[in-house]
Amino acid sequence: MAPFVSALSRNHLFLSLFPPEPAAFFSDMATCARTAWKVLAGCQRQLLGAGAPVSHTAPRSLPVRTFAALKVQRKGRKEEEAKKEAKKEVKKERKVVDDADRHKPFGKTAWAPVDDVYVMRHYPRTVYGAAETINMLKRFQELDFTPRDQPLYIDLRLDMTLEKKKKLNAFVSTVHLPHPIRKQLNRVLVFTEDADQAQAAREKGAAIAGGVELIQPILDGDISADFYVAVPDILPKLVPLKDKLRKKFPKSKRGSVSSNIAQMLKLFQGGHQYFVESECFIRTQIATLDMPTEHIFANLQTVLTDVCSHRPADLGTCSTVLRDLYFKSMLPSAGCFSLLPSRRLYCIQVKEIYQVFAPST
Image (cartoon, rainbow, N blue to C red; front, side, top):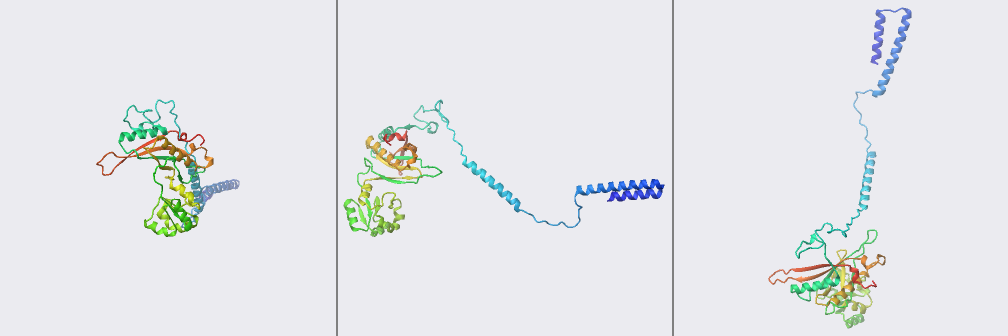
């Protein structure tokens, strides 16, 4: 309103000094009215553009509404987490390099070393057949002057994966090798409270047969056996032996809990037991190096056939379950003055495992 007041004061001062004629007076009044309306319009525009007049009173604290912002933040976090999960689900396909037409394998020095001494990581792993592997280990035994009856082990890696990120459960099995490794029979202890069954078990070759009276001697270490079997009725009373026996504790999945005592004795007295460890590995002895190659090969075939019998029917052939097979021969050191005798390890991968089986499997 300041421009409006200044304009009116100037007009009054001009009229007081120079009084106009009557006709000119009315024309000057119209000019003043137009000027006043212009000033009012300008003030209105200024007020609307600049906003409300600034008050000199103390500012009032308004409540802050943060829940809307929190909702936006949570929504953003959920979207980011969903994107991260989507990235995890999308697995990068491993690029397979075809070395068929290359002069050397990808990332290696050459296909084969030119000397007997070389760095193994610079060359591809040598793969041998089963029969060739057994003959090589026999030859190593002769060159090292080690005992001929040293044990021969296999390391078998299995594919335990199923659909929808599931895996096969680890299993334990007992097989009868066509050419047994041990010369004497295994000691089998039978748990039963029936006196007639205990007597029949002893006649069939059981080392010990009895009921709950055997629990305390087993806990004290006075009685031990290679295998423990039981009838179903006495199984709940054997719970105190779980921590002591551990893997040897009778279980129906292993075939050590049954009413047919004669069948269990036949299985475990001359049976060879193996189990899956470290989620997907089977490490077990199959023979000794002094056995004929045909006998070692027959024992290997028996173990692999039994392993494949545990696979689900919808997984296909045995070649889809078996991944890698290694032979290991534990050779003691030839040194006579070693305080801690070391062991030498020969580990050879076997080519095309499924060729070990008979054509019917």
